[in-house]
Length: 136
Image 1 (tube, rainbow, N blue to C red):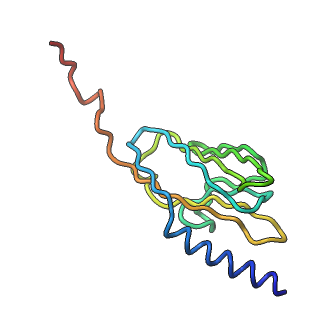
Image 2 (cartoon, rainbow, N blue to C red; image 1 turned 180 degrees about the vertical axis):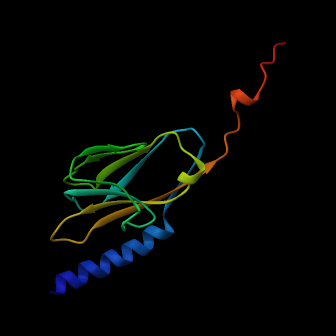
């Protein structure tokens, strides 16, 4: 239908804008991070993915409003008027956590709603195990 074509085109445009406006967060190894994804449409299935939501990249895939898998957790809040939100937490960050992430809500009858963010994990500046105590 014309509406489907319009929605597909609008969302493709939105996705290309999201790429230009992707939020970037810098954290140190060992720290935790919580990022808020803003999602246009509500959806029953919630996904957290590294890079794209294809097999092998899916970190969380659930219909629950809260879920945790290892160091990754999500908390979903449906909002009727505003964008719904999906809070993503990753604990004990490592260098290999650096990269692009995608939050996604999936629903059968409308296109998926997506939001991307990027994490840069830097080497910790201070490691107490590698420093001597200095007393003055």
